[in-house]
Length: 89
Image (tube, rainbow, N blue to C red):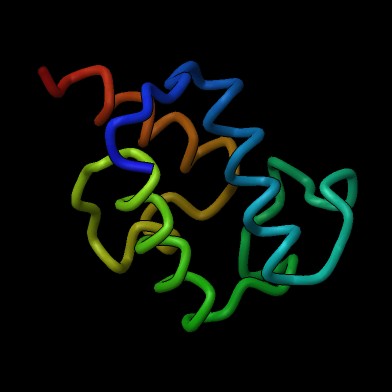
């Protein structure tokens, strides 16, 4: 998606993250609780690493592979990414 302008609002990031996690876990987006720890909804280390790669590709940033453990909910992760994306420039 390089070259495409992405919506980097917290809501847009949260929605995208929930969609990716739902895809990995083969669930509907509505089943992803934004406040529940990712590990409790089934995200394992393999999916966490995959999510880091997806974030890097979508937003053209580098993130730590531990990102999902350092920011363990969809809301926490969306807030973190929003801050990172807002500070680049």
